[in-house]
Amino acid sequence: MDGGATETKKVSVKRKFNVLTVKKKVEIFEAVDKGGKKGQIAKDFKIPASTLSTILKDREKIKRLFELRKGSMKKIRIEILN
Image 1 (cartoon, rainbow, N blue to C red):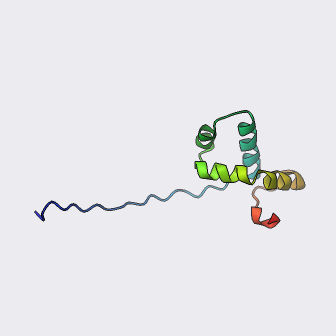
Image 2 (tube, rainbow, N blue to C red):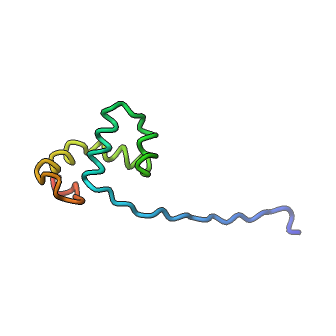
Image 3 (cartoon, rainbow, N blue to C red):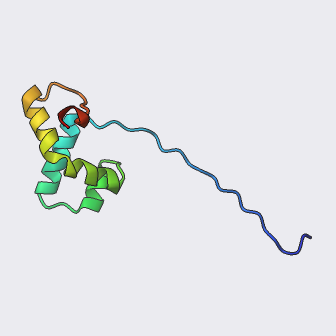
């Protein structure tokens, strides 16, 4: 034995990169507006809570682009309006 010292290995688990469509983001807005709990909404859409917060933070930009494009875009980059 080596004096009781234990060695631990850190295992990093990679998360699958998931792109949400604009339509899905609008569905998230509707779920929040109906009074759903944010933690449950994040689980329902299989996204981290921090991603939900970011989507809600950029709500006006996303809705404006959605209206501008009439929902035709599958995905958008928010940086366009910055």
